[in-house]
Length: 377
Ligand code: SOE
Image 1 (cartoon, rainbow, N blue to C red):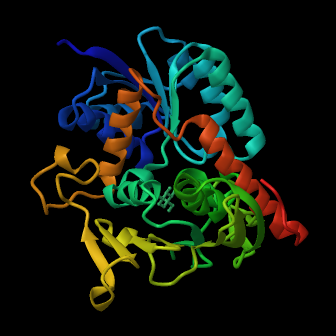
Image 2 (spheres, helix red, strand yellow):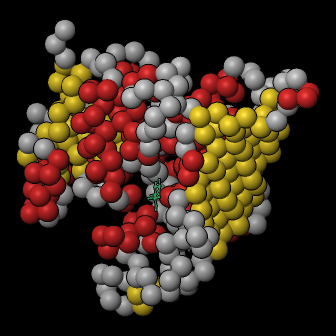
């Protein structure tokens, strides 16, 4: 059966431009899909560098103005891999021109921004998705399946951390191409929107909606040189953010993210404790799911370390042979494949509406850190 065309217009060519391009290239090779993604056009302001990226990844052409990209009639899907301050305008324009839209996380710099984006894709009736990739690491998807099967029973506790250490130096500037994540006007927030958003997306997927939060944030380095102005300027993002939460199902949660945990590069972990069983996952050992089942025979009861690489495990029948590993990049391939499958069936998640829920929680976290009160998303 011949496959339908899915012509991609990619905005951005940084780290995320690479993960997304790779995902579209590989998805139809490893998964049986009704569409064949084509890397049609990459868009970035600097033509020379956009062309170099196009040559490297096999894009058919280049645009330097995203409005021109969105207006083209030879593009089916706009994928936004550009900094956060561009998500809102591009997503809305893409939806208004009838194109499917995929967007890097967080969806908006604020929930107000993402609300408008949700309204735009709903009004246009176009397929949409946000790249919260960690859901699609096989061990994380397996955790979801175990929870949904009822194996854990009533959930009491949820704990998550995302720890990094790359901004500890006072000499690190803020702003500009590589360091826009440190500039509030571009990023929206610091680790709350960048790292906690991942933890919140996974948590709400696994354990349902969050009812309320109480948070604290800190900016350890108060001033940094700005890459664009050359001036020493106030740092307005949060370097660290921690919050307690109550889920609608009555379980309690602790979340923490920081870029000041010396020794940790991208340590995303979560633990869930239920009445019958518990689960632990760790990004640095991403194929392992630690599982404790209280129903096991008493004398043999203990933590199992499940290596989630068997053909029966989520996504793994599409890869090598049982026992062999895949990694971070493949989680994006799974996401692209699920999005494409969803075009002919139930839409894949997280949709813009789901990601907006995450933005509501991150907004509540930032508000609570200011007010010192419990806040509702
Ligand atoms: C920040 O360093 C970052 O690249 C995030 O922006 C990503 O979303 C996260 O997956 C890894 O860390």
